[in-house]
Image (cartoon, rainbow, N blue to C red):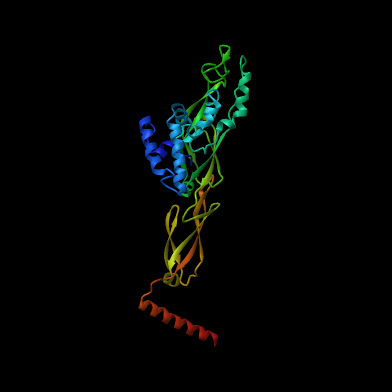
Length: 328
């Protein structure tokens, strides 16, 4: 995850120079290598604090960082003519208004061939506007969200025709200063996007918040209780030994709630039960669900009392007797 310079120094985003300087001095004394000899973590933290201070204590670099987040260096290198030419997408709540969760992908470079080389030849002639290719981003969701479907608040830099040059990139015989000769500009557009039930890791969902097409590549988190294979789920249920032997009713967790499973007497450890319709919904057919496979795990008793140990010894003797009779 990208470092947040404000968080590193422990100051708010509206902190003034005095607050930043004071925070840096306090943390520098705490993590200085001379004070923490041999501690690599402290040395790494000291470097991060120095980096944060260098950026936030400089008005120009801080302004770029506030706007572009972790991509502020690229924006400075590109200069004012290209710094705003890239598409950037982020989830609401991110610290980078044009970077965010899209993994630090330099979307500007993705469209460099599309727009960058065309600027030089735009003066005095109308250029055909080209629609940007869909943005692509990995989105991590829980298994529960994959089961029931979910939504995400998404903000994109939507493309709009430049009002000054009307999309030509040329204003009054010169390069349009409003859109930097591109013929269009980008305005943040917010929207709720839906992720359907039944998606799996690798599923690709196309959404269009604000008219900007975005491809969401789904990554489903590993679950503590369930393993998934397609639309089927697998889980284990621990049952005390005596209940496995005598039979009982077991409560089995599912993603839709708990269900009862009748465990017949003399069930064996590792026996697998199939619960149809208790698996994952099928993508595109949410009313159809896969199977939940439940493996029974016998729970052996521990810390036996004297009475319990005596009973087990009696059972052992009885079983030996039964075995001896069967051998005759």
